[in-house]
Image (cartoon, rainbow, N blue to C red; front, side):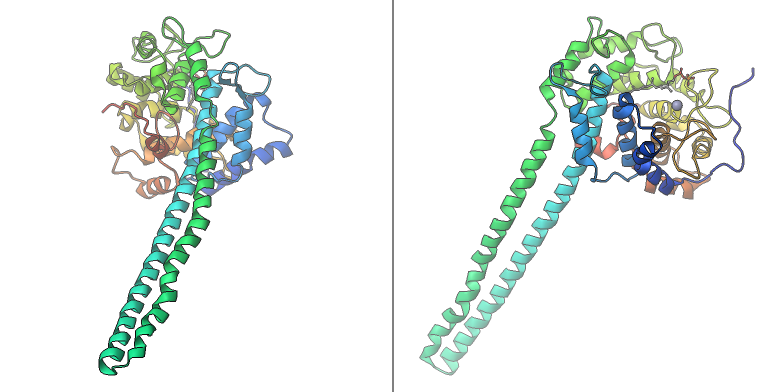
Length: 438
Ligand code: GRG
Ligand code: ZN
């Protein structure tokens, strides 16, 4: 049987061009404007998600455009339904609701971290100053008492009784003075920061979003994406992930949601768009992700599905989304994150997978494309980097031929959570539990 695949040539990139990708990602919006290729309104929200998450994975997310992005995302919120739209004038949709929450959480947690570090440094400084002041005071008091004793006992001079008070008094004043200045300076600062943070965290209308997602669940447990009724297992994932980010998973019928996903399981262990639909890696990611969030991942046929996913790897090392299709970098995410959830990421050939993703880099402009030689874009850059990160942080594959290159990936790319495609630390910090198999 003739396999559809691509051929990797020796001239193609073999190392991670991380600095070029950082430049590509941070200059992408301006480049779009210059070329009058402004992302169509409909894609702005997704585009923002791909760019910001890719920059987060590449350790290059800065605070600069935070306000602008948060304002844009919030401008897409529809208070009537409780959902987020892809852009003004469009209908609110569960996919854009998840994307909005992911972007907001990434940016708000980033700021929370910066503030936390600043507060810790400030507190340490105050303690240090207080300690030094106390030490100086103790030394001074001891000195004064000694002088007092010398004058009293050795010189027998009565006037010295006044000396300690004259000497100690101004120094004793230092303590309340330092405290007063500290309180005056620090308290309003801390209050301002806490209020600002509270304000930002409070921008999500949690009740509204929960109401929107509840309104999308059907009698059979499935989810429609918006008010127009299309059912898709992608939307189950979006609903579950959004509610997990808001810690409100119990506000939907979890059991029915899981039953619907399980009803989409096929004879090959995979999952499709709806009951009876052909297995597809993208939908498999969504179904495993939803089951993982809902704590029911153990119900899948892990070995059977693991093999089906491994068979997506072609001789070039690239992965396709289903049989008879060409390889594509984005499946390095949809397939590998699924394998990671199943505890079987080491079942594919990592060296060949890496070689394929690296060959899809644009060594001039930076960025990653779907296949070698194609035009790079933020979507494939995100999933290419996230795929490299999954392999770099995979404990099961220890001995690698290109250990130095893997170590570089580990250092340059944050560890990504296989369910949320966000830095694992962010998910941990939010206390979100997901199920993975072994
Ligand atoms: C990652 C947090 C996060 C959210 C996203 C919407 C969603 C949740 C996931 C979508 C998963 C999915 C269906 C991915 C597949 C994307 C893709 C490349 C579709 C193309 O399908 P085909 O059949 O292409 O046109 P092939 O590769 O089969 O030829
Ligand atoms: Zn793709």
